[in-house]
Image (tube, rainbow, N blue to C red; front, side, top):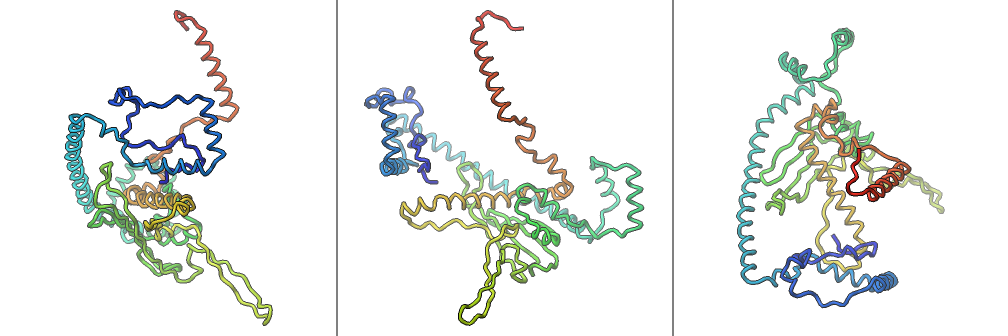
Length: 399
């Protein structure tokens, strides 16, 4: 990310690495910098000069930007014995990092081992959802025991009468569509046109890769929109662990969707208009294709730009585009993680809504909201309380 501040404020300029927060406890204490004092008046004049001289401000910001990631020289100023201890600390830490890398790799293998045990259960879930099998009596009874919203006997009798009059549909209609729509981040990407397609979703599953990463697999029944029966999205991680000790996301690969026609492609909008030739008076229809918001853009992930050398002016112009791309990459990664870690293991809870209610509450769900007037009254009350407490003598005891 660029070190330049778009608002022209250099108060948050970067500080070189390894600069102590206070020289009072460092070896620089004995060598204080020899800089004349700048008064408040001088500071305000300097700020005004910078504000009125964009070229000078840009030059200073550019210079400050070059400090990012550079050493301050503090470590080099330490005595030799202290520097050797620092080097020893690095060696000790490196051994710990090696153990941490070994732990993460073993943890990944353990996840893969138990995922193999989950697969038969996911396959049985798929059969229930699509009407290829029915749960046993024992499974139904266990589900009833787990259900916190048991219906009373009258409701059960009414359901039996309805079942006798109407033939029950096969499987669980709309299972995956409902589950996806209850998943917070994913639901924001689903449009009405997407819902029609997701009705034909047969299964959502995943597989681990041989290299660090995973593949999401979406299986569809025959539908009028595309000919694919399988859509995939693959997430790749870097081979080496990141500084935090976790696997670092690298990139994602999607797949091509074989839309049966342009009209069926929900990822584009088609704008048609007629154009008449002034000479021949003949008319023709012109089509304009524009991207449309859709869940199925998930299978065409954004790609990080190639690292080419660029001029500073070009970098400034592309700052906003880079921020937008970074946000889209983060959202794409978040969608994949939610489907992998939340949807697939707890699909029925997302279908019933139990996961929405109990699984992932909002951080500020119970925070009381105030209007601007109430906030002003509260702040005035706090000021009054503070003034009163200051006026009270030390030995005063409050009831």
